[in-house]
Image 1 (cartoon, rainbow, N blue to C red):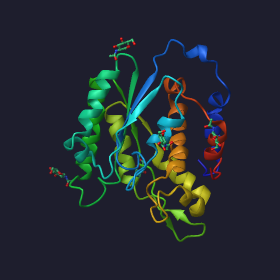
Image 2 (image 1 turned 60 degrees about the vertical axis):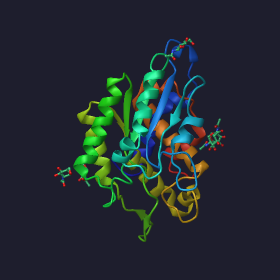
Image 3 (image 1 turned 90 degrees about the vertical axis):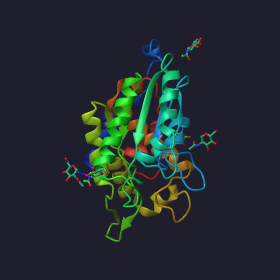
Length: 258
Ligand SMILES: *[C@@H]1O[C@H](CO)[C@@H](O)[C@H](O)[C@H]1NC(C)=O
Ligand SMILES: *[C@@H]1O[C@H](CO)[C@@H](O)[C@H](O)[C@H]1NC(C)=O
Ligand SMILES: *[C@@H]1O[C@H](CO)[C@@H](O)[C@H](O)[C@H]1NC(C)=O
Ligand SMILES: *[C@@H]1O[C@H](CO)[C@@H](O)[C@H](O)[C@H]1NC(C)=O
Ligand SMILES: *[C@@H]1O[C@H](CO)[C@@H](O)[C@H](O)[C@H]1NC(C)=O
């Protein structure tokens, strides 16, 4: 599909949420509780990290639904389990499952990718699959998220992001298929968007001027909305617990700097 057509079709698919929906359709559904598992590109804004997680939790959910950001700076699929973060995710999933539909987003790759990570690609895929299965075992719904792009542009004309997490993207999608879980393709959506708006606009989302990976608060709001829209497009149950923002969604899927 052409680079330009994709955002247009995407926007059309969002029309039902851009129009205001009657809340009574949703009155029988449980509220959602989102547990976000990941590295610093999911995590709360801090000195050394910041991702889309808090923007998603703070700004996209209907009243009654909420969640907890377990994103951990520097985490790999290995350290997240060994350091005890994953156990906390599963523990909280168990306590919330009675009164909420529990979703666990799983996004790793930025650190697993490093040659020093101690996680090879086979292990990365296996670790992701194990996360997915363990979410299912406690009655939650796993949603794999392909890694947020880095905003590093090659000096082409126009400047273009060379997709450097393509392998991790593929392995994440494969883990979703293997475990029969959901996935959203944040890697492609964020790469396309940053290519459309270009480096000057994309670097407005930087946590600090020279950090092209992590997001400041505004960047978290924008990419949190992108994550939400990607879910809403595919999953009606998530649409039902989502508060839309047509203005922001039109900017994102129209390739306009937000
Ligand atoms: C989310 O809300 C917290 C608490 O109000 C606030 O400190 C933080 O800046 C917000 N972050 C985003 C990305 O909206
Ligand atoms: C669910 O909500 C009910 C009513 O508010 C409360 O009594 C119960 O403890 C909650 N259950 C769980 C597992 O949190
Ligand atoms: C990945 O690591 C595992 C465990 O150390 C090892 O058995 C396997 O051969 C490695 N795979 C590759 C492709 O290096
Ligand atoms: C990722 O998967 C796609 C489609 O299956 C394939 O065309 C592409 O070569 C893969 N990329 C990498 C880096 O493995
Ligand atoms: C929706 O997004 C626009 C554009 O970013 C922003 O100005 C506005 O405050 C947002 N509205 C809500 C209710 O968050």
